[in-house]
Image (cartoon, rainbow, N blue to C red; front, side, top):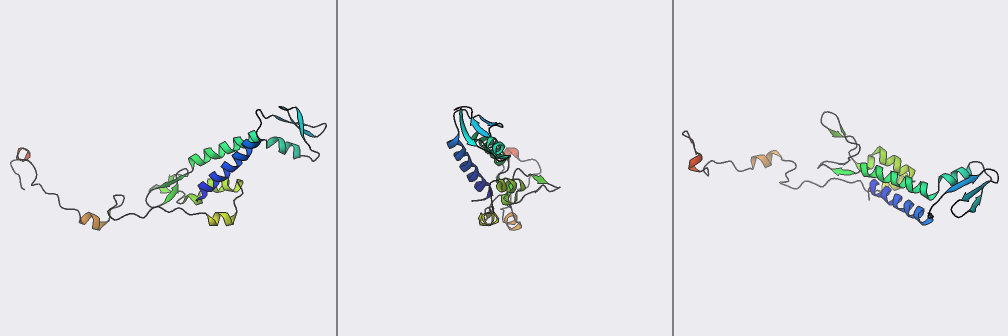
Length: 174
């Protein structure tokens, strides 16, 4: 599992939890006078909150807000994904730069956007170290992606003996 797969797993779990706690039409409100968070759909008090800022935090992190954040994470994951070019398993979202179009991020696990997203989902140095670092497949002999000098010299010579007589010109040499 690489960094992209780990983040996808975290988003799936966060989304699952939020969907399990989502109500048909969630609407939360903080009553400043009595320090209560109210569920406007069920017309009941959810929690009494006396600490400053705690009620705003609860209201801000209702299931609908969490699901919106999960959707934003999925959009980022759709842009920053691994692409193999024969030499690297690079991040397509980071793109290329320079005269030779070198990959900005040659390994998907080094993508700064995905690392920031993983930080938001609680990745630790230990988890990051345990993730697989994707490597491109080894080119097979005779693979058309990269020809070496031996492959070029081993190509049989092109002969003209098979050309039909109707196509041969006046100075034809077989």
